[in-house]
Length: 160
Image (cartoon, rainbow, N blue to C red; front, side, top):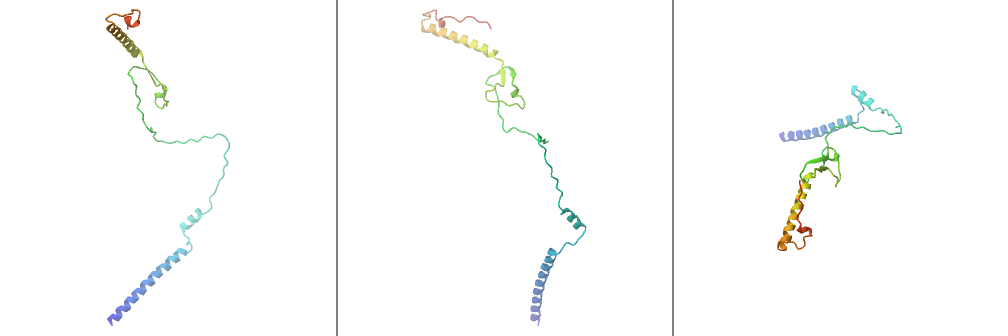
């Protein structure tokens, strides 16, 4: 009898599980399809479901400006190193080189004092003239063949 009793219990337990699952589905379907149960929150929800009020405005013709106030930081996309090919005292700086300025290729940005370079050029020209005279005398036995030629004459003395 015990084995018969155990089989009936298992069958009853299986049927009870199936009935319980069907009952849960039936309750879920009932509440899913059930009408609203009116309460304090439902009246607020219904008020929000009403059609919104719409206001139509017609813009006037004319010039309008849009102002947007923002805060932030502006950074350069790239950096370029600028340096002079020569050293010297700066006489003037272009407005384009100052903060926020822009400039194009070939535009003069700085003016450097040319005095030092002019003096250096005069010294180099005098040295070149001396070397020409020495070369001319060396090639012609210490004398110039034609003293009227510039290469045979010494350079005039210059004061600095």
